[in-house]
Length: 146
Image 1 (cartoon, helix red, strand yellow):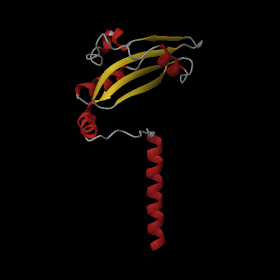
Image 2: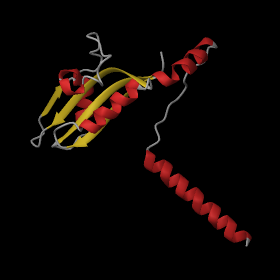
Image 3: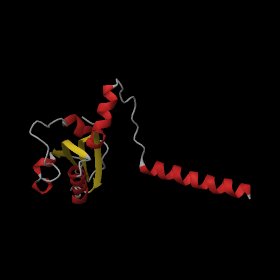
Image 4: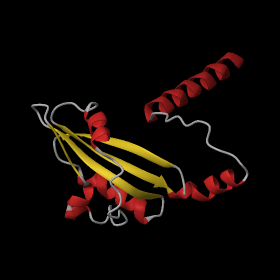
């Protein structure tokens, strides 16, 4: 099995965005991820939280095709934690995914006694800031040589 990750995607409004679920379905079809479980969390304008499972929505069958009845790994505690990150009038899609693309590498690492010792998610805006700072440093260094 490849690395498993829980991802929470938050959206404005109280309805899921079809494009986001379609993107998950495309990753699944391409063999990049396997969707293990999912929850839809809605925080109303009054702050009331409701949850449902993505498999309950027929329009998202393509994304949830491999989720079996034994899923139910994400529960009320997970939903409450995700809801705590939402503003009123917003919703979230919580996904438990296996990174299938990394399964062979993970297996090889385990076979030789290795393990993942750490994992840090770097937000895309941090990466862009670092790239911008690097480009500025290169320009400044080139200007200093002239």
